[in-house]
Amino acid sequence: MKKTISFLSAFAFILLLFAACKNQTASPSDTASASDTIVASTSASSAHARQYLIACIYPETTGDYWGVAYNGCMQALEELSVQGVKGYCVAPANTEDAALQTALLDEALAKGVDGIVLSPVNADAVGAYVTDTFTEENGCPIVLMTNALNADSPWVRCRALEDIQGMGEDAARLAEQATDGQGYFVILGTGMFNSSWATTETVSSGYLEKNTSMKNAYPMEDGIWWSKQATNELTAQFLQDICTSHPDEPLALLVLANSDPTLLDTVLRTTEALPARPQNASLYIINYGFSEKTYAYLQDDRIYGIIGEDPCLAGYSCPYSLLEYLLTGEIEWYIANPYCVLTQDTLDTAESQKYLVNMGIDS
Image (tube, rainbow, N blue to C red):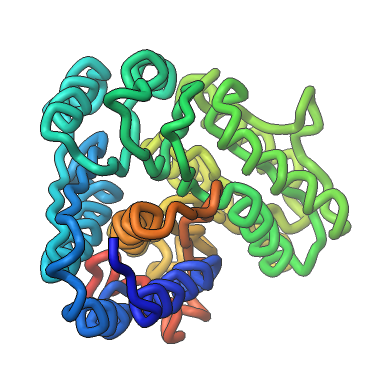
């Protein structure tokens, strides 16, 4: 395959943009000029390059996260089509059905795709399929996006996953900022058996214990209230007990349960029904996960801050990362997907405004 130096230089440029996205979002519209450079620099050699076919297979293509990711993915595929790269993005009709998603993988292999961007609906079931099905004869490179995959397969060449370390530390920094590093904190997590997100929650706890004077208001066992192991009623009672036990010092509630959209509403409903706290003992809520609803809560001062993933830029960058591997044979094993930290004080910054555009918010 004929490759030009200018082509690789342009890819290096766009990948630098992606690498800079921890805590800094560059919207797909901002990177379009870089893609234009790629198109211009490769036009002379495109006739000598084979047409790549890329499949992007998601859990779904609608909703707060995947609908936005789909938009970013389709923008990237539209740009790449100018260079002769063909691609498509699909998802199973049922987001819980691993068999439907593996059927889409079967279909992709039958089409002879050159590579796949995959976000599995189930780490074990889809992982077993990849291990068993992607052989030396019919396999193709996989860029794993966002969700984990339990697969022993050499075809998984890159994991573009959430920056759980960074997000955990930044959630803790928001709690420290809100309380001046004083008082108490409580971490509400997803579940101890979700190892990836449990890391985020233990990182937050560890940061606060090491770097601030704050004390864990729930020092039982591992010091985290696991929402998946409790009903909303038990969580509400837990919060009532915590808030009334520490009425005279600042209290930060870190709602880090990424897979429970009802938890934040339970937290707000419970805490807002309690007696007013003294001004020097305010309660601050930090939430993991961005949506139009959580954005409205932030604007209304019902929560203090948001740690928000950027699915648009993740969806946009993964097809480019896969094509870079197809062209060069090289790719980073781990790529941290971008995210943004939002508070009322930072909503007007360029970083936050780019993020809100990516998330489809007209601010």
